[in-house]
Length: 522
Image 1: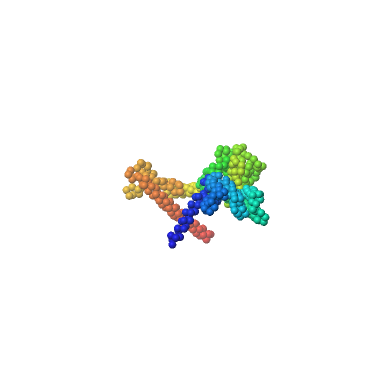
Image 2: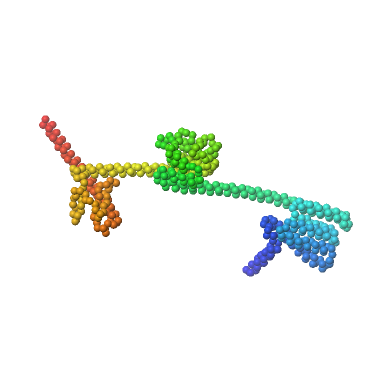
């Protein structure tokens, strides 16, 4: 069963391939519509040529050779010529050759055949159908022309067509011709309407595609700008010092976005002026050296951005009545000032300038505003870090002062000598009157507490033992010794303060009782 199912399919496929190969259009014809026209003409020409050949073989055996057979042979030749032309680059001329041959056959059949009325209706009906190979105007000329010619010739050379038969034949052929033209006109209009509808749909599709591509380009551009802004923000936020942060920020923004100039203003503590903190290039250095500032109550773009808490955009400086040019920046053609907001507080402004008009558009502002927000946060973080570092440094200085004063009070030369030194020799601790000199065979480590030096720990070792590992171990021991002696100092100071407090309490008690007994005796 499998074989019987597959075999016809294979046979049909082989026939289709053969048929396509026989009527295939010339390779130079690329349009699908034109290829279809050429292949249709080839199929018609080949079919009629084969039919004529087979018909002639049968006719010759019945009637023999006559003029009608000659006309059929000529039409067969025209059909083969039309078939060859339809498969060449000149395929548009094939319908003219083919229909011309059939016109010759039609007239021969009418005037040489035994049944002129039958051949007249039959052949001219086929002729009018074949006329559809032309466009509507050419078809109308051919149909009307042949109707006029055949009606005149039939009156002159076909005396057998008289009376009602002639009238019926003429009316029939005219009706067929008119209906053929009417159907062709209807087909042509319908095809034209379909083509117009297809064109409109194609135009709408192209417009939608262009709009989609434009929207995609806009989205890609916005995403690229946001990614660029994010990368720039990440780069500048890595800076620690505020001056370094702003210098890196303006230079990175100018370079990445291809700008003419970029600068950052920050509000002074009194919030009366915008002070230039950083600008790009030599112009930025000159303006900062001048301590360039803008009054907050002025009409500058940056002052407006801070006061209005929104971005101020000038797309073309030559057309802006409020733009004030800077002599140091003569090529500025567009400018945008973006407020730097840290939360709800405006701390300054980011000013960007381009040498091209309309360089900043409303669609691109969100990317720059996002970047300005990142810079504002980075500025706040840098300020907080700077304040924290200052507070830490002040705390360390205070701790060193406190440690130094406490040890000065402890080593007051009354309770303790001003200098303490001990030596550990032969498993015995020996007090020293003064520190021993440090020799080349000695490793030393400082005794430090809160950055304040209290002394040093020195150990004499043979050369083979004076290694980096031993030096690190000595530093660790020195830190532990420092903490231990500080704890002992605090404990001893506390005990001394307690003894002094108890002595003061006893003295006050004794003096109180003495005062009491004196009062009683009086």
